[in-house]
Image (cartoon, rainbow, N blue to C red; front, top):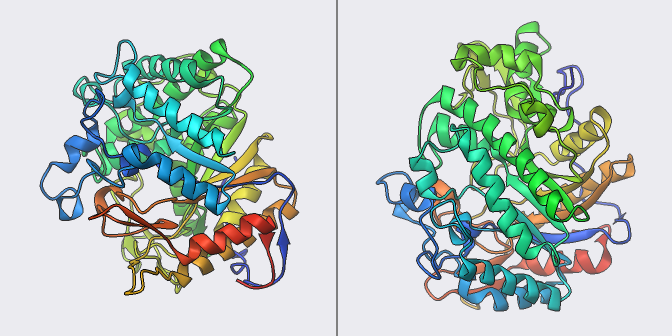
Length: 478
């Protein structure tokens, strides 16, 4: 059984110190990422339909300050300006997602050509500026009619997604080499259908387990549909990883770590890279609602070859067993895991309250390298939320973000030095954006967005990152 855990007797190494030069390999892709609903805006334009996030954001109390992505960073109208900023920074790649409701407003049927035309223009603009497009087909904005028909807990959605993937890939496969089917399907399934803190806001544990399976099945069927059109491009998927460490070297804490790691990491990863669900995790999930949704042949479809795996990383979990242990209770997004807590560590935190531990990124990359079949990796998301503001001179100083990125780049470099096939790093995010249930209260961007005027301002971190790209690495200073 493979795990993404660290035993209590082998505690994670300290985060890399921000000293010493790190020279990345020639051709390493330095980029930044966004997602459609978080930056595009233009919600009612060119035939775009309604997504589950449009609906969710209208429910009182679901999104901080009643914010929505209806306008966001207005990337839909300002993409040319944003691409010029990317070129100014020297970005070599840009990861973005396609809004499914722009392509199929009702979630099925022929493509809305006006929607496809927007992405054709964006891709052409990127290529004209020497920036490599990386497309994610699904970053959580399901067309509302498909949710009305049952959403991801419905098996039929796997076929609908394959149809959608075929439409987008058919239009852009000649210009875009790098593709991801899904972004963080764990979040779509368990935050959306178990905990209900993300769209569509359902709190149905059994449905969340079905949703996770059907998301992976949709990925596998999309791969087949895309390769039938053009097998030459590089296709993959993006997962978010949380290394799990038991708080103490006890049987109870190790068991808690196994269960949390199993649901949070191995459930999806083993299915994708080993072609089978981990048996111990299925045993844990039987009590949540049964496994009748699993059918013969599904795992073979899910485990189809991928050319690359996207790695999203933000924090580590330290866990303990027992309801009487001091710690933070597990959220409802962990169905079937009872009597375990997350134990806070004495570490700095981002504005979202996420503990900063760069060593976790190194540990994730090394575990993937050691315990799974070879596949090229890219860090497709990593960044820090802050309370950034423009000073009276119009500057945005964000030294904490610079420090955060420097330490995580060094962690990635440590993994590279130990043989990990890491080919790129996409900072999250290019622009300040709609941060899901947090609305616009937190900022992740390298580029500051004044939402009232849509003015863009390069933060200090953007200029620092530009220098990292120019050097293809870090010198001995931040």
